[in-house]
Length: 153
Image 1: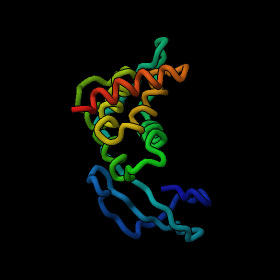
Image 2: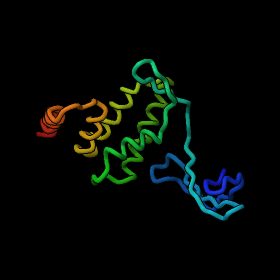
Image 3: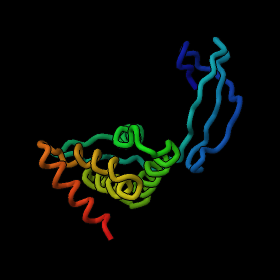
Image 4: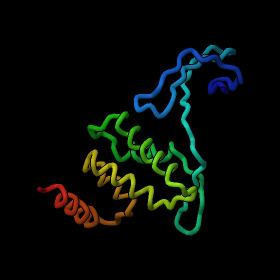
């Protein structure tokens, strides 16, 4: 594993343990050249996924990009990093086991919205505002009203 500090190719694993959701192995490493310590994560990848964007564009699925967008929606909300990690890992696992390697971006967005709906209504609305491309305050009002109607018994 290349050291992120000095780019040396040799590092030594000091500690390995599973992540809290069990979907990855967290490894603490030490560079043999500069002695810097860093962490890597090793995950199972069942198949390479391609995201089908609007306008016929295709790009490789990036778990980190999904994690960043969910984390942004959950910023300053009472949602732990473990909950976010479980949501993203669950979505990735579902995508990898569905059989299709070409995934429409809309499907990913819907899966994220479904997951956030159960976690936090504010994070759900934040993500929806980007995913559904809200343009005016009225768009927020209408969507938030529909969320409140669903939440009422």
